[in-house]
Image: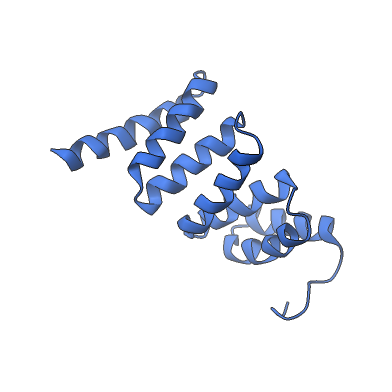
Length: 131
């Protein structure tokens, strides 16, 4: 796929191929394809979520923060988007932003232990940094 021309197929095929690439352990390739899909369908939450996941898995944490921020703006009650934003912000080094969004995710879904563990980890890092 050239950067100058779109990939073959339609947006739905790009999304499906992006998900397969992500599942197969190729997050950078998935992100490249999913960026095209997100540009074509900027209001698609499923495309944007897949893109954010691909960016996170590819180590592109600042990009993932932007994508998850867009998702949380579209739907503030999306606990997964809040969690993803918290994780990406943590990896990007913004512990205050991470704690804020992880706390929201925990408040929305207190039954998910991995949300609470991620929040405890960020708060511990915050405490260690201020000590």
